[in-house]
Length: 272
Image 1 (cartoon, rainbow, N blue to C red):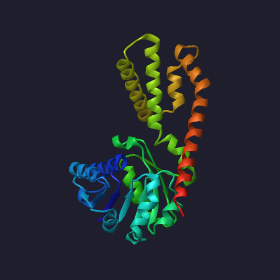
Image 2: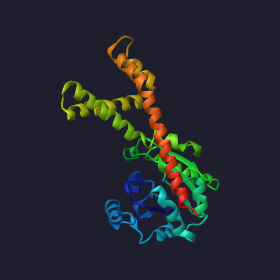
Image 3: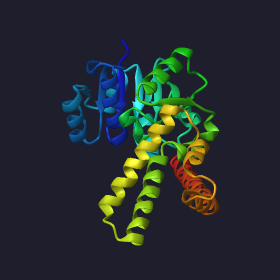
Image 4: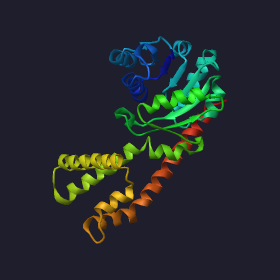
């Protein structure tokens, strides 16, 4: 029996625990959690039946696989506090952005992996980006891919591509929601229809478009071609998007890359 430890039961940690139990990847009795805020851990345990540990060290000592779900700037401190409680017999899976496999290996003796899920895992969709440290075994790969495959589509990638691919996966739900929110707001400004009505129409259309793409296996271009006939009304709108939006996304990626660089610099500042 594999025991899973989870340190950090905030939004991401709690979601992972709920999905592990829901999908049968682990029984509640096989999961032990710790959070600095005892209230969050108690709430999660009440909802799922998982066990609560009195400290992070207790989680490490009682688990085979440790899911570290704390903020990037907290990772080093947590791992150094754990000290010898993490051994080469442990598999450490960090979901913190900008903390590299090299960092994990430097701060812990455990075999390591990185996984960046998206909030869409809550409904069993989206992508989890995955990379493995040099000491990770085939069994480690199978376990991690199975775990995240039960709640998303795991994609193993070279670690150097994490930042740009995170923008396409983990960050993208917020980007897409913000774009659709602005689309609805434009309709309100143009016609005076009620905002809740505009947002409902856009939300239902977005959901239907996603289903169309998933069910038929068609690409973006095919969906566009089906709706935007040459010389038609929709084509005029598509032309505006083609002209104006590339620069927006170029700027988004530039800004997110700069933020990643800033976080990495702050992480390095914590290293003596």
